[in-house]
Image 1 (cartoon, each protein chain N blue to C red):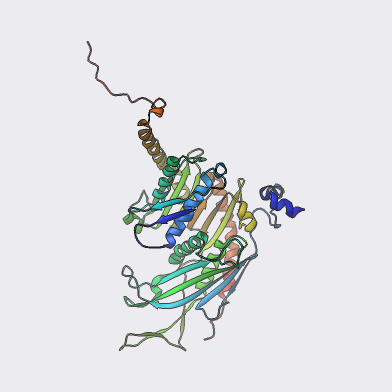
Image 2: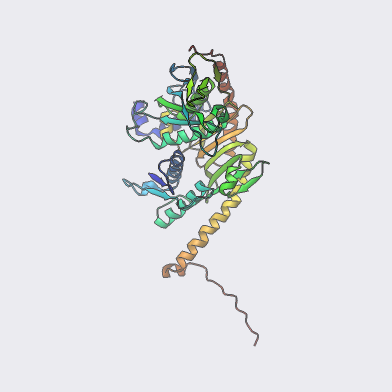
Length: 178
Length: 273
């Protein structure tokens, strides 16, 4: 089950849709058979909003699930894009860009086969544009995956158990010739 | 005996049928159920429609109220969709707070309805009074694919909405409906058609019924208009790109039959006052 707490205000139909979105991704990704007769509750608290809300929520969800140590089928990264007036695409839009957009896309990719596991697209667009966004979005998702890797490496570096497993940090030392 | 097997192993049951390219209710793998639309079913509403997708039955009704416009859009009215999935439509729904599914379908209807109608039409006095249309969608029987039926019902109801003329009293500023006056029809910018595919074992099945919805791995819903422009897409399924492309060809094949249904709605006469 999932709940979304807004920055302010009460129940919002849009948040109901986001709740269902988080729940759908959780159901696809979490290996629930490992935890029978258990309820996993996901709460998202929106601290501040400036566009790409659903994508950011999904990325936070992935990191939270990894932090909780829940068994997952794959990691996932969300990418957000808007189609502007002249059919141009703007990635990771701000609230202003979203307001003047003719179409908005949020796509979540999983890391094993790079399939799109969740798509939310609204506005006037064509199938060709959608296919283009789907393909380009993979490259943007790669950046999100590398961010996950970096942040986890930083976190684990502080833990003695994992220091052995991580690649050593090579400091660039200028060796003076003797 | 077949029933026992169906309850014990629903996925295996489905697979046995799919091996012969057929679905348990006798449809071909890419077949949709028969669609029936009845317009003006609710006489007290400004516009209404009932849609039947096989056994799934959804009624949409539009009630108009006067309201103050929002500060951001002083000369447009608004449409407030509310989908209710009551206990009577399916035993899985309990009384109480609306289910997540109902809220999510309401939100999807809201995003489509703001695109379909020109909200400026609903303005009476800019900045002061506008029409606020409450679009109530009630599912009477949930046999799968409520979203598609709800979108079709919403569009048919909006298509058959006749807004009464209003009279503004200059002294008091009160707006009233003229009882015997002319009615204006709502104009829709396009006719949306949504097709939902349920993903099961690398096969996409359009228009899932309830038993197929229980065992599905995910859904893909696409909303297109008459010019084959994509209006919305909601997918939560693990799909490779080529399956997505195959799914689109199903949508393109599916929607002529929907437009035939809309065509039948065109010949509805103006309702008696």
